[in-house]
Image (cartoon, rainbow, N blue to C red; front, side):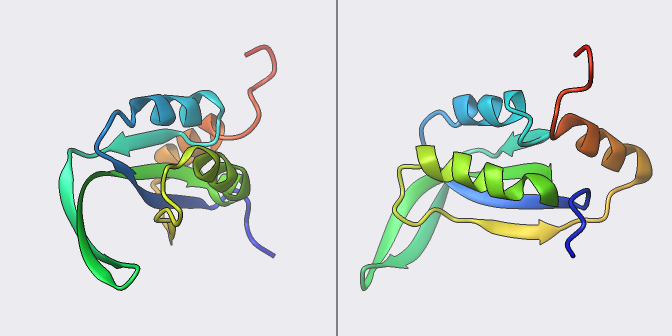
Length: 112
C-alpha cells in the first residue's frame, strides 16, 4: 500500500505564457504546498515524427502521494498540450519541511 503522506515532486512543463494562475490555483486548492515556476527555456523534443522546438516553463510541484490523483486531474483539465509532461519523483524531506508540505496539502485544518 502506498504511503499517502509521502512527499513527492511533480515535474510538468507549461507554454511560455503566464503559469502563475495555475500555480496559485494548485496551492489555493491544497493540491500542492508549493509550485516553483522556472524561467522560460527552450525544449527540443520529438512529436508526431518531427523534431520540434518550443519555449516552455518548468513547474516543480511539491505535494504528497495522497494528492497525486486529484493534482494530475486538475493539471490535465487545464493543460493546453495533448500529452503534458507528468513526472513524479519520490523525495526525502527534512522533518520540518516534510511536516509543512503535509500540512499545506489536503484538507484545510479545522477553523482554517
